[in-house]
Length: 94
Image (cartoon, rainbow, N blue to C red; front, side, top):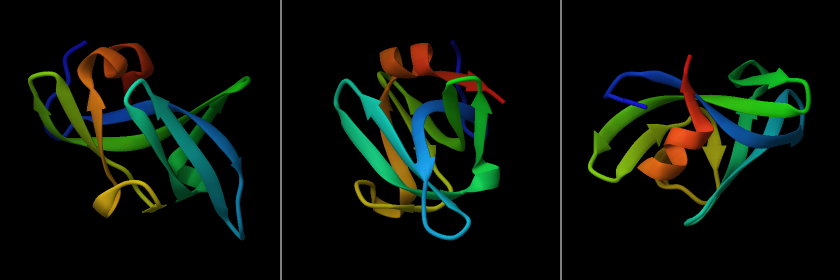
């Protein structure tokens, strides 16, 4: 799949109820975990699957960098660097 800067994407994640109007999400990749809180409207559910919306800020070589909305524990400024091979299987254009 081709991703380019500015693309809005859905990223497969685990989503659990969080405090107030937030959802706790976890994105598990083959190189690590990104977790934090986003607003409910940033998560789309399809049956048992959940997807968080993000924006591609860089797509270079084997890495796709995604800006995620919300507050994250494991990522500076809510930017996740995801392996392109993982992104091709776990992300889709919104």
